[in-house]
Image (cartoon, helix red, strand yellow):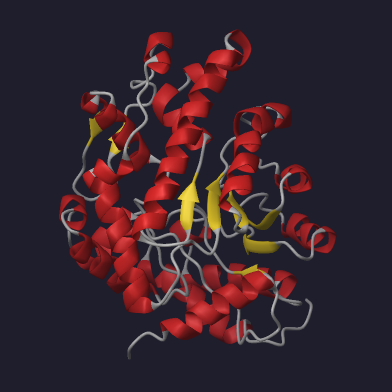
Length: 359
C-alpha cells in the first residue's frame, strides 16, 4: 500500500498547531544514516553520492517504519557541520568515514588552539558536496511526499565537535574565546539557513538541537550565554516557530521554556512520566514530542510488548487534549530490533485514536 503522506502532514502539523482536527497521535522518528543503511542495504557513501539516491533511500526507510515524519539526517548541525568546517579550514584529517554509520569528527581537533578559533573560516555550505546533496535531497523529498522539510540548527552541538572538552574549560578560563567560537558557529548556522531558503524553500519550523541545556553539562546561566542568546537571535531573523530537541539525561526543559518561546520540546528524559504530566499541566500549549520513550531502554533491549506498554503510558497520560507526538529519542541505533520500532505505530493504532480519555 502506498504511504498516505498527506494524512501524515495533516496529523503532524495539526498536532503542532493545537488543532482538534487530528485523527490519531502522530509517530515521529529519527532514522539516521545507520537505520537507512540497514533498511536499504546501501553504504553511507552510496547514500551521499547523489540527492536522488539519498532521497529515495530516506523515503523507503521512513515508509517501511510507518512514521508520520520524514527528514534528511545529515542536514543537521552535527557531524555534517564538522565536515563543512574541516573542509573550509583544511583539516579533513579530523574526519573519519564509516560504511554504515555517519561520519565522525575527532572532537576538539579543528579548534585545538586559540589561534585555530581566531582564524576559523566560516563554511560556504553551497560549495560543500554533502550539504549540497543533503539540501537537494530535502527538496526532492518535499516534492515527492509533500511533507514540508524542517531545518535543524544548533550552536553547542557544533562547539563540541570543533572544540571538544576544551570548551568546558573555556567557560571558566577564557569565556570570551568561547563566545568568539559561538559567534562564528552562529554565522555558519545562518549560512545553512540561507542555502536552505535558496534550495529547499522557507521551512515551516526550526528544530534546535539545544544540547547546552543540560544540568550535567553546565549551569542554566551558562547554557543561555553560550546557546540561548544565539537561539533568540535566530528567532528574530528567521521568524518561524522554533522547537527544542534535547536528548540529554537532565535537561532544563522547564527553565528554558520560561526564557525562550519554543512551541515544542523533544526529549526522552526525565524518565518519570509524572514530570511530563506536570509539564503538560503547566505548559498546555507547548507540544511534547517524545517524553520518556528512550531508544536505549525498551526500544533497544525490550520486546514489542514492552514498547507497547511504554507507548500506551505516554499516550494515555499525555495525548488527551492534543499536542502530543509519540517519538522514541534520539536517533534509532543500528541494533534496535525492527519489531520494536514497528510496535510503535501498532500501539498508536490500538490506543492513539482521538478522542482519548485521560488516564
